[in-house]
Length: 276
Image (cartoon, rainbow, N blue to C red; front, side, top):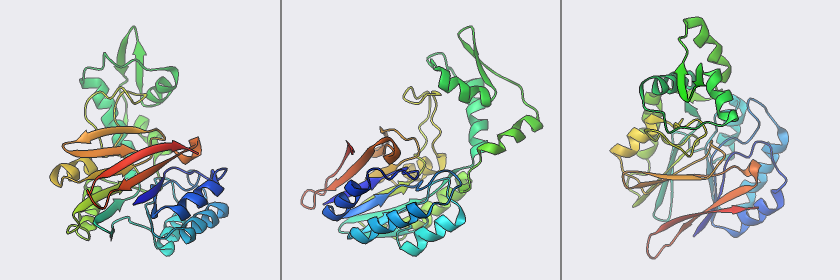
């Protein structure tokens, strides 16, 4: 079995004809969130995802971090939304959580990481420094300095909050509710928009530290799964939490899609990344 995996479309439909062809040829479609541009509503994207759903024989998905309530309602009405839900096909049980963890709290944790941990191996580029500077983190004479902030300084971070975010505790709770619906499936796969958190310095990320969800990581540690699929980072990245393989899918808007394969005889899962 093969499933087309789409993440972070962001109103980009230049590859629509190939998406439709792949959706019709494969056994299902998995959507990992961010259908539209942040905080926007676009009828074209509504119509096109509906066409993909109608073309596919089976489809599930989750909302990203930027959807307005009417977009989340659309995913519900389309019958694909796995946020706080689970669905099975063959021996595979899929369950999910959409959105992201609390943005301001995550930024505060990044500031504390740079204040207390050894970050000497992180060599940020100009774009990464633009992000870190906005968080009050500066690079001077080969070392990082975290600026002391007042309450009013932290209030400026509100511009980074997403329309769909949750506390880490709530993310864990959502996953528990959804998992309960597929817990008897032999192969369990979690779908999330934001990836799980990876501890320590992560050189693959521009700012040198994971911005993933600790709630998802905690859940996987408590409930080892076959696979974690996520998006949000707009790049392909893989790591492990215990024995659980975590695959971050690159963005459709950057010209990529993924394929999840399942061998019904050996029960083995595989993931591959392709350019359109």
